[in-house]
Image 1: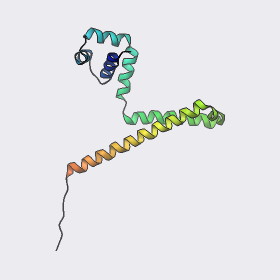
Image 2 (image 1 turned 180 degrees about the horizontal axis):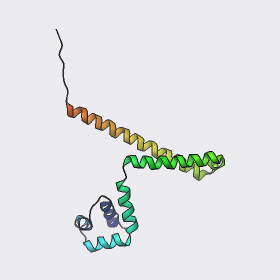
Image 3 (image 1 turned 30 degrees about the vertical axis):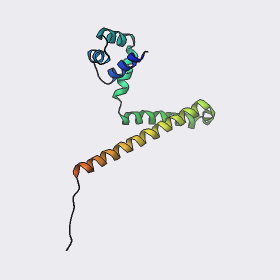
Image 4 (image 1 turned 135 degrees about the vertical axis):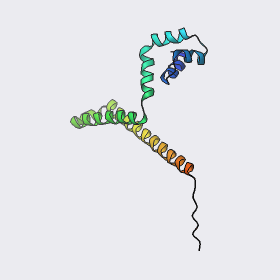
Length: 126
């Protein structure tokens, strides 16, 4: 896929229609329609992935993580398979990063809320 097609796919994933994509990229809307038609699966998949929330991603990864652990618990020899061990480590790393990102967003939202409320001084000097 060419760079313009990748940009079109990203815009499509973000909810833009073919006319808006064509205008933004400076190409004909017919070209955009053809790209979407020729790569329908990729464009639709990109849009579906864009709709996932952070919590959805954590749930999906957590589910994958659990399935791998159940598989290993049933057959510990599978953990010796480098591919399974590698995939488990990757899933765990992604879950950890997503959780950290989620915590940072919550902290940022709390900080913004506190700044929005302002500061109240109470003077009880006698």
